[in-house]
Length: 401
Image 1: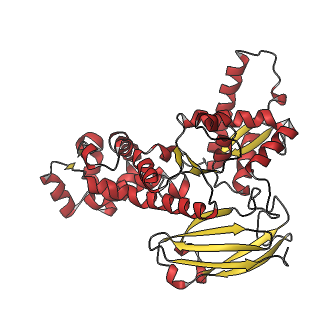
Image 2: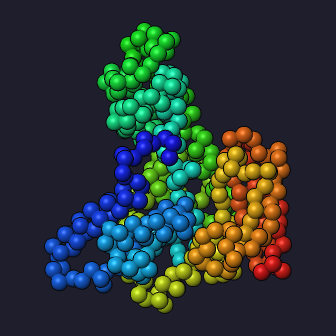
Image 3: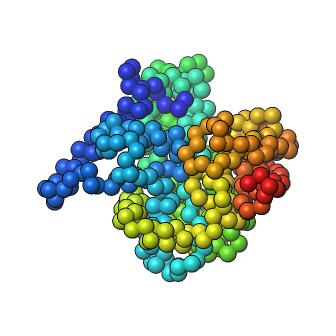
């Protein structure tokens, strides 16, 4: 949140979300009433696709905002359901059929969001500009002229990021003309940086190596997570890429270069996710069909949860900053409940204190932690994404459960 300007006085994020949902509700109702005048919205099931990183607190906030917006008339209403975007995609069986992938085939859905998203490339571009104008200048420009700040990032995305293939022969971006894109930045730049940019007529050249360096760190993280999952799922035949960053030609090329699996990127992803949410909604009132759909995803489920049900011998990969991991370790907690919010709740017990080799933890490096579940043990793989230094251990959990 430090990268964004503060909201206006009197407006917090919950009110902003509620106002957005209230206006969305108006549009939905106006559109539906054009076709079905006598429909009662108390009978309408809303299925809302959400990001995979949403925890129970985030879902609660979204549900409260939907209630305040008038979408549901009861906080605990079953007429609002959440589905993660990868699961929404999975509900559309036509994607599998069109890819010649048969039922029962193991596939991987890679959601390019959050710590592995295109926003990382935008931030690297901002750092690049900061090195040219001075870090204090870019911070001042961002704070005082956020409209122009957004505009230059938007133009970078249109002219450079979306076009980048990772091939030198395809690289021909326009120069960055500050007078055209963000004239207010001149008043923020001081001293030697101001003199240097004056000599360059406030024009910056973007070189191939500069742009490639903006992409490579986040792409390496995505490749690393895919490698970890393939280590767990040996018979995976296809990889589906979802999320806006999956449209990157460079990302697709790197993945196809390294992995032998079928690589698919659905077109019109926002439409695909919406259709998947509708398909889930159609199955919601058909318990047998919905349960069968879940069985196709996983026939055996670990008897504890990580927000959602976890298939046996399947792993969950998470990425943390090394600064988040205090005293070279993490505490792992377990519960039999589905709606616990805090680790000190009565229903929660400490499973293990995971100690991590200090050699893996370097300042500000990304650290991936993968948990592979079995009924009797959890295999833990901790790896420094930058150095590839790895630590593995197993936790015997049979007696604890």
